[in-house]
Amino acid sequence: MKKRLFITDLDGTLLNNKCELSENTKQIINSLTSKGVCFSVATARTIMSVEHILDGLDITAPAVLMTGVCIYDMNKREYVHCNYIKQSSLKRFCNIVGGAKDISPYIYTIKDNELCVYCEQMDTPSAKAFAEERKQKYGKRFVMLKSFDELETESALYFVICAKKEIVYSYYKKLLGDPDLYYSYYRDIYDESVYYLEICSSTASKAGGIRYLRENYGFDEIHCFGDNDNDIPMFEKADFSYAVENALPEVKAMATEVIASNENDGVALKMKELCQ
Image (cartoon, rainbow, N blue to C red; front, top):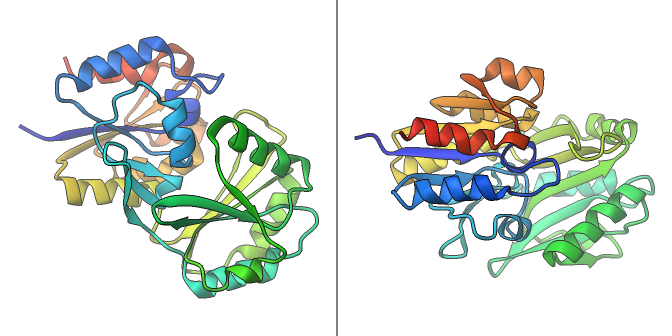
């Protein structure tokens, strides 16, 4: 019998438009995992927000976090694999964005199994909103630096810029060109005026995350669910892919099947159907 993994994106896919997990979805998935179904998530989020949002949901396989930067075992509460950014790439990023006044970039690191986020300032509205939500809801730790130069010897995992579309795109063009980095540029699904640029090691992606799980945990068949651009690499590597009805057209075009929307428990209902 094949060992199957069901793995889903969160925002816009498993979560509803209020960024919440419906009780129906929770009950269906927990019922399936209690019978031995392997289930996990692949998200741009960090463990702090994932644990908060998915409280009470049974995650039975390691989670792919930060768009594939980290693999995290939620039962053992530890990082089992991380894709670090090269020091040369960290230096180039800091040289381009350091001291910027129109953006507030964030740099993520892990120390002693704990995630830490560094910034130089939080003066822009988007960056303030980004930090405040994560501090208040999830207790994320932000450390203010005088200069990113202080991180010269750190092992960085992840860079994030969020602002209006034209500002983020301008930095996207400036930062492109490093073959050791993977770039993800996309619109915030909760606020259409905000765009994100997420940058990590070229060895990291949701596709790389599910490949790691397949190779290290013995999964023969992977079913994945998504809605946004950064789910497409995962769709390409999975055996079966499902786009929720509210997904972007290009994501639907890549999918094995289009299922019910995130507002209508699409992921959970499809899992239930596939496990009958």
